[in-house]
Amino acid sequence: MSRLAVTIGGVRLKNPVIAASGEHLIDDAGILSAIRAGAGAVVMKSANESAPAQRQLLQAEYAALDHRWNRLDWSGDTAADATLLTRSGLSPLGFDDWLAQAVRMDLEARKHDCLLVGSVVMAGIEGAVERARALEAAGIRVFEFNIGTPYASQAAKGAVSTELSPERVADLVGRITAAVDIPVWVKLSGQSERVSDLVAAALGAGAQSAVIAGRALGLVPDLDTMEPVLGTSCGIGGYWNLPLTCHWLAMTRARLGAGPALIGINGATDGHDVARMMLAGASAVGLSSAVMLRGWGVLSEAVATLDAYLAQKGLSAADLVGRAADSRRNFADMPVLDQVWRNHIPAPLARLD
Ligand SMILES: Cc1cc2nc3c(=O)[nH]c(=O)nc-3n(C[C@H](O)[C@H](O)[C@H](O)COP(=O)(O)O)c2cc1C
Image 1 (cartoon, rainbow, N blue to C red):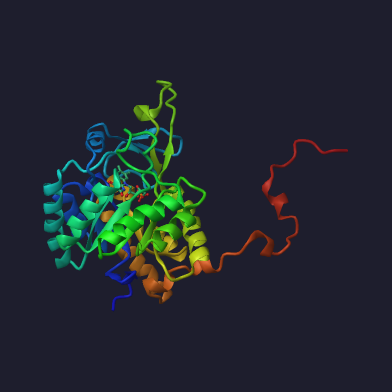
Image 2 (tube, rainbow, N blue to C red):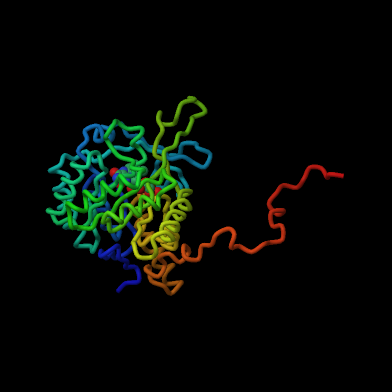
């Protein structure tokens, strides 16, 4: 077996690099590009039954920002440390076309030993159950159930969901897992101080994996117009989110143990970041913004970089999972030092006599 192979629940991935959902995975050409770039799994652009959610795609806007919040060109080689500010919508395809696309793309994915994942962002639970059942009947091997978009408070009522209560997560996930036998991956919000509780609820209700954690909302004032960039609060993400994702992966592993397979998302930009999220407890890692900003090569390079890192360490991908998380300590466990804080303050302007 290749050193890159991992398993999520009972599902084997040829490598842990997941092409995570986004606009670049709306068209067949995009999905095929991600498959051919060598991703272990590709998550199709999410769909649901809500007309306002589809219309939101036509109102969608995107900005890449530098570290001083100035707009960058969206040029295909945008800096890897760009922040991505977006107001996205859902797949424009109607139910039948969406399902037909899933079947078409799954055939292609299988030829490349790639896992094609169908995805719904929940509008209503009945619509999500209907689509999960349809995907299963069509032979799709995994269903991703996103109940953690950043946008529910900003979008039309009922278009998308940001579920923050463990009880509700358990109820919704239970409705899906009761309806289908294929593995269900639940994508959860990061806009919570209870991410681990949300994961526990999803897994307790039968999910095979939790994808943590969805992007946050942010607002960036423009100094010239004195209005918000893109006019609204938006989903916001970037490389800087990686430590937050790693924290939640480690906390969740500490809470639930090494058994459940977690998927890391939000802030990975390359293969070294994939390794970082795996060390924090992820069995696989999604990349979305980096691919939107810099192209399909991000996926193939992530696989190659991870492979080189594993070769250098003499480890397999599965060996990485949770190593940093398991050596994480609490503040009180750390040694007492010799006033290290003095090395981290500016020199005083005057002495106290
Ligand atoms: C423009 C855009 C569209 C997205 N659309 C979806 C979507 O349809 N379904 C979904 O589950 N996640 C969607 N996401 C979220 C990404 O899959 C991913 O969770 C998030 O961007 C954080 O990962 P990243 O730092 O690799 O981008 C979208 C993200 C962006 C930026």
